[in-house]
Amino acid sequence: MEDNAGMPLRADDLAMPELPAGPAFSPLYRQIKSLLVKSLQGGAWLPGQVIPSEVELAARFRVSQGTVRKAIDEMAAENLLVRRQGKGTFVATHAEQATQYRFLRLTPDDGTPPELQRKLLECRRMRAPADVARLLGLNPAESAVQVRRLLLKGDIPVVLDDIWLPGTAFKGLTVERLQAWRGPMYRLFEAEFAVHMIRAEEKIRAVAAGAEEAGLLLLPVGAPLLSVERLSYTYGDRPVELRRGLYQTTAHHYRNELI
Image 1 (cartoon, rainbow, N blue to C red):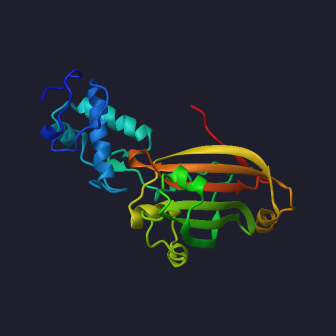
Image 2: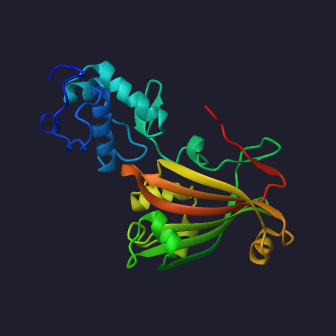
Image 3: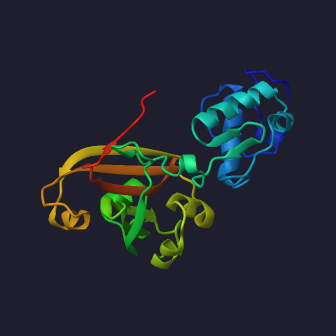
């Protein structure tokens, strides 16, 4: 096939999944990107693995190397892929130090890295409340896993997290499994449940600490907290985690970079 932006790729030509239904015309590099994302979604390349070179992909797709590069550039900008000089392009993973706290925007006021210890409080399987089920796209018969934990800086509780996960996708997630895991939680999701978080949406508001939250965070009742609700998505824009966190901001602040 010639590399012509006006000529759509055919999935059977590429021996790849069919392109999703949509407008009749899509730039060629976007079609390549769609096929690459489908390959990631299907597990062709796992988090942390190197993908074929641009030359190999260009030959496979019968397009120019520049077209493949443009698709990969966009995927790298979206944190789906990571380029490493002299080594190749890798599937992004939460195992890397630079991405362990990718979705956590809480930063110490003293500028030190946001390294927090975990204290697991609870992990149970149950029917999700109606609002949680709606956000995660669960039907009434589906179960959910609720995880409650504290994040601490030294001995000081900083974050109280209530995490909701689809029960089917996280079958087998238990207190023992969480306690035994030493790496980032999202890396556990990748390695043992094949669920990769690729983007998230957040809602932020100021709240006052209730009696239970104040007790866990070692604060007086009514102390100001930052409430952060995060809905995380995997490939195909499928919601796979709802996280409701209460942030103690006495020595921390919420930091976001606007581009």
